[in-house]
Image (cartoon, rainbow over all chains, first blue to last red; front, side, top):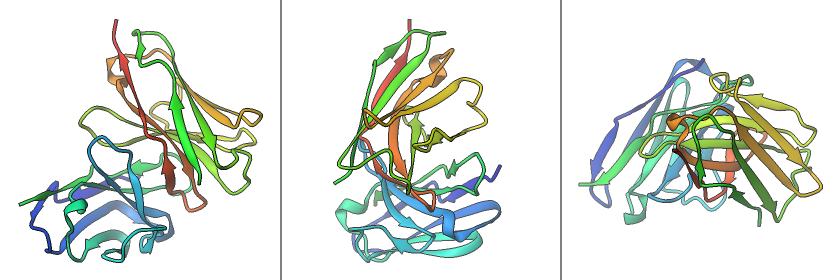
Length: 109
Length: 119
């Protein structure tokens, strides 16, 4: 089973700052199957990035994804007030289980 | 616009079976391009994949839950369902249904439904 470890657990930043979130896999994974989600309190997760670097429909271009192998990054270039939320990475390698990272909370400093 | 809506009891007794249904609107569960999945989130915790199903009935389950989980699809009602047997308090969670795309992402998600396991 592939384990996804997200860091940091919490990121305290101010609006306008750049956020860099990490997702590390326990073994090399296929980038095509790496996704990122945003979850706000009381809401369902929302797909942000799929295929490690492709933005989902309607996602602002301040969100970008990168990485390969075992190391993946979600970057928010300039934080907007609505970006403060929890972010999860997710991978499925073609056979169960599909796994999620533990999440990174981006909070207002 | 594709929408998913979970429904089912919000309270289940320990040792009983949790049953939820996801109704799909604005699209078809019979689409050959997608699977459909269930994900859960215990209060204050992270996301856990439960399993996924194709319209033909092919299923993929999380090995950690496989012995207790059954996911089925009803194309005539445009729904898919989850059954989780022998529940305990550890199964208390918000349960989400979602479309599972060809690159294995989930989008969109239902709003989620809280299921509490308690006597």
